[in-house]
Amino acid sequence: MFFVSRKQIMKQKLPEHIAFILDGNGRWAKKRGLPRNMGHYRGAWNLVNIAKECQELGVKYLTVYAFSTENWKRPEAEVNYLMETPVKEINKYLDKIIDSGVKIKFIGLRNRVPKETLELMIKLEKLTDNNKGLNLLVAFDYGSRAEIIEAVKKITHQALRYEIKETEITEELLNKNLFTSNVPDPDLLIRTAGEVRLSNFLLWQLSYSEFYFSKKCFPAFSKRQLLKAINDFQKRKRNYGGLKEAKK
Image (cartoon, rainbow, N blue to C red; front, side):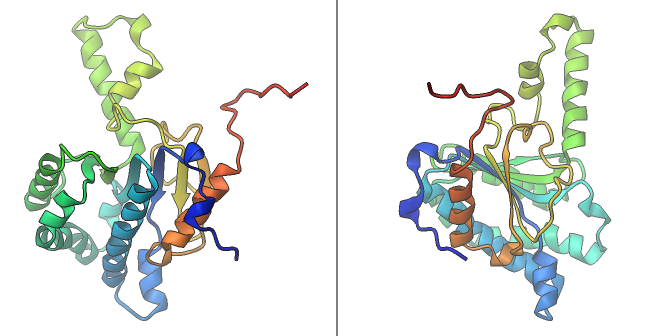
């Protein structure tokens, strides 16, 4: 395993937006004979470390897959933990979160999220709205298919009210109606724990993103691992479906 330092990261080729599938919290805990919830707890603290590193590097956007529309199928005790624990923990460190400079936005459906959790989400968005640092998008009760359906519904309503014409239905219009409106598409997707699928995450937005898969479970995915992923990204050529002309 080779070591990558911050000095090896080229600022001019830094990914503007990194998307992250935070996988393997439960497996990390199981390997250590710990309850699955302990894995989620350690994963949450590791997210703080990863977000700090992204901000210090100069990454502008970090989108993390925290809770999917399918995660409601998990055991009730685990779901309750994931809904209730953030409320208790985040309120303890609210001042530090605001002072960090990170701007937080939650993307996803909101009708199934418990009231107390939803109130905290709205509170965090309001209190960090003027922050100028890293834009942290937390995908919570998020599913890309649900997101696209919601966007189509909005556009359909606009069309039925004759606010838009058929010829005005474009990629740009769909983008404006997604949860990630006004956010650039991810340059780099990182998924941990050895899984190599998208799991209904940002299907539209990841069309031309570079993918990086790590065998490390997320609680063990260190800042060093992040630098390694970015270094790997910077070695790739991105043609977006075209071809670069060979130098004569």
